Length: 211
Image 1: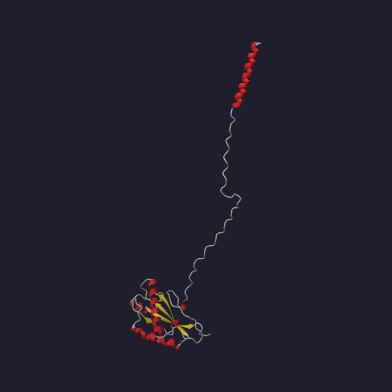
Image 2: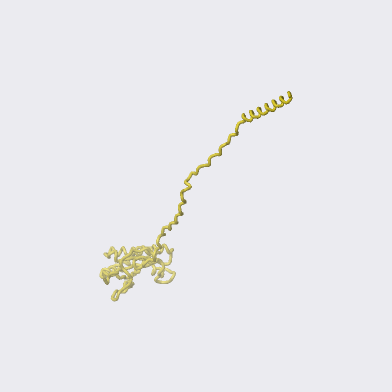
């Protein structure tokens, strides 16, 4: 009987000890999950439509072909209200061909021997108020194309200035330079070159002469 009581006491004590230990145990703490990062932009915004490419700005217009009759040509010239088209009864465009002015080598200076020709040209223009004059500057074959065009323009400009000083209206005379592109004589010697260093005169009709 004594042994049975002792066994019950031991068993009861063990049960109490187990319950005590179980009650004293700490409950595990749960580590909270980190918050999800908040978006830095509005996810509800719609994506803008791609913009259409703009057309490039138009480039510079291409130069048009020079009109010799207006005083423009291979070399720079002065313009005027004249054309090379003549109606019936108009004078010949080359009526002043005999008054061609000649120059020394590499020079745009008007020689004394050519001044009488320019006086005759001036008198013609004064007596024919409805015609104009195109002065065409030319050079011999020596020199570069660019240089000869420049020299031809200087020669034409010198004659135009001379005529203006003789009383001709500046609008009545236009100029153009052909450099060495239009030789009067073919050849490669001084005699030939002297005939190509020149200013030719072409008589023009005033555009509104018949109006």
